[in-house]
Length: 215
Image (tube, rainbow, N blue to C red; front, side, top):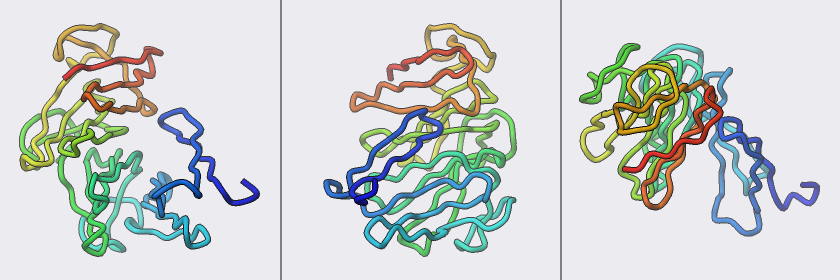
């Protein structure tokens, strides 16, 4: 606002307009996915809203040092409970990446290899155009919208980043039921969140429906 007491944010994939009260918040910075610039940006709220790039350079794929790392259409991110790392959906690389904020913003890949579908270990797992992710309250699991596979995936952060499928059979449609019997018609704009009881909510974009997954 004009008095610089709050920020209004267009939360694209959550389809919301959000307000951040700068006078009543412990938040000192915002992290932003800059999709078309292939970068992850930081806005310092207590430093005249200074903007800097913490990871990414040109389009491509590369792990490593912050200014050498490459993303391809990063689309979503979340900060871990401790506030020392970011998890990023690298949409067009079909991977989930990690930025270590305590280690010079070093970038690594925690899940995903080539495009496709496969559960299993970190380097064996496969995604197809993942679009968004969220962290559970305990901070030990990521839930990922794997939109071209029409599935919801889980990454266990304390179990060597093991990947599993919690819902969806891989066929587009609308059907409730047990995990592998359910059908989604996901899209790039499909978003996901989780409540304090580990109930998962999915914006099933092409079905114009909000789905709930109980775990």
